[in-house]
Image (cartoon, rainbow, N blue to C red; front, side, top):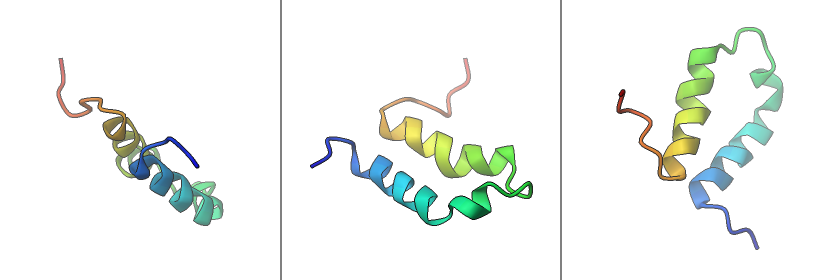
Amino acid sequence: MSSAPKQILDLVERFEKNFESYKSPAYNEEQLRSEFLEPFFKALGWDVYTQV
């Protein structure tokens, strides 16, 4: 059993399912940020939207 939050497990599962398309040059940095990085850090309790 994993102790990772469900949101992170869901992100990992989605990444594994779509791995080939994510390696494509058409998949850009903005997509990575909005689809994975922000939800990942948010699941860890980070405030990813407030700019200091």
